[in-house]
Length: 499
Image (cartoon, rainbow, N blue to C red):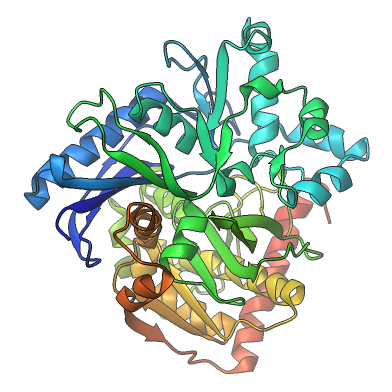
């Protein structure tokens, strides 16, 4: 089969377009960053028009780089930063406010209010989620309550809500489709993952009009066709969709129960295939829909660390210790260890398994001998330590060990980080030949919908491991590192009176 699949990976700091041949070969790739907006401490926003421009530029550059004709596109897959919340005018497509990003903490007090009212069990039982400002539901409620005239317009049916996937389909289809997929719907605090439908009682608790919500579809089907998109021919099927972490799980071919992957991007996200039954976490994790294809739904256990690669960006932009993120490994290798320095990267609170929105970043163990290299190494180690916490919780919930872990995302290219991760987990780390498995997952889902791939087996056949990292430290050395980390986390939390 000739032609190509286009995957749009719309992330927190940039948009990537990836072109994939029917044989699974990457034909072209381009990424465009866009600005982040921080109107107040703890608030994080995106201008969706800047996102749209970054998507268009990435697609244009990827097509130009590959030398293919845009008209030969067989289908488009979309994957996205998940909980980021957009509210827009159904007629004009204009957002009523900047998108509120998943990292945003402005609804922490509202989440506490709901918890204090005894509502967490209701939300957790139906959605698999905790009440945390990370998730989309309270962000949407905030927009309805704080942007002038918006609630009245929403109740009249003039507005539409969506996560970034939904908004992109709306724009790509020329305003003809208001849809989302099951994986993204499961991140809103409004979707019953067992009955697989929007929950009116949960919507009422957050005072969200049901008319705002998109139609929920599977992760692999034709939702709409392109219409009026500059540089993209009309009529191309938009055919695959999944939240970024679910798309990465799919792209890593984690199709068997117990298969697990960790994506190291702006944040770090550990997911395990939990099979066809909902597994409710007792250890601070989330239960989510991994994907739905046809009538079959696969669930996942998930642990989220809000800050991973973003900590490296902070070293670059906030402290000026490095001039580019790619320098972090070389800087960290200037020393043999972190010199007793521990960095808890709670720059946006702590996610799973702690769920502490009030925790703050902590650098612990500094001495007169501490250098920029020690802090660089401690930053990488802090990313890895967070994953250890998540793996321990996930193994307890699943009742089975994770014996190998597949990794992806930009920071997975860092050999020092991957070796330290293997050392601290005590298990092998497998890195695929293509670490952009988020984009691959979206392309695979679209390809299945338009007949490029026959099924899961053909996707597995294309998967390749580039390198495996085996543990190289003793159990005693591992435990020494982890005890220092746990002590630092306790201190990061106790700064706000939390023990």
